Amino acid sequence: MQIVHEFGHVAGGLMTGGRVAAVVLDPLTISRSDFAVNPQPHITVWCGPVLGVLLPLLFWGLCVSGTTAGRPPWAQKKVGRMAAFFSGFCLVGNGGYLLFGGLDGVGDCGVMRQCGTPLWLIMGAGSIGMVAGFGVWHRLGSLKGLLQEDAVSWRDVLCAGSGLLLIAGSCRWWFPQV
Image 1 (tube, rainbow, N blue to C red):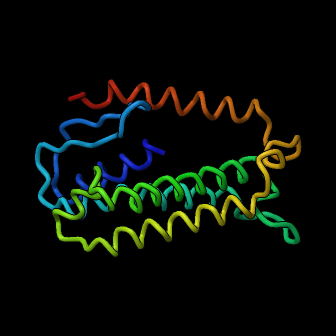
Image 2 (image 1 turned 90 degrees about the vertical axis):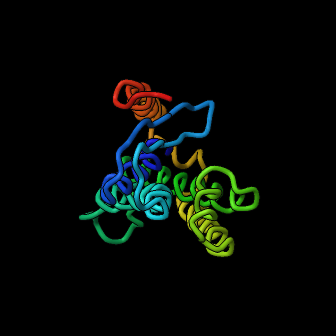
């Protein structure tokens, strides 16, 4: 989730003429993207949670397109169910970050406030994200059901998790650290 979120910040910064100084991805800290030049910080800061939600949803949509009628798309394919779970996780994670971070001005929420974003908008976007994410998870059913043999195996989960850890670990070499 941090990778997709920070990718959003980097993409937003680069699209607005910014220059990345460092991207910090560490599971023990709050991830962050530092910019040497950031001419549009209000766009850059919002691209993190927005793309951090839209990209997983887009991936989920691609996974379930072309499925047969009669069954919910997320119940038809292993990858589609995993993509749905990850999309829900990104919605809940980014939504919770905005909702609760808005109260204290933590991380991105502090930058959003400095750029003039009203608190009601930050917390409203966070609330919508969390409700949507829990809705996605609710439609998937129980975790036990998600991991049934006809859905997703533990091997699939371990392979996907290992791949994400490798990507996160290699980010230390993609961008300099602060």
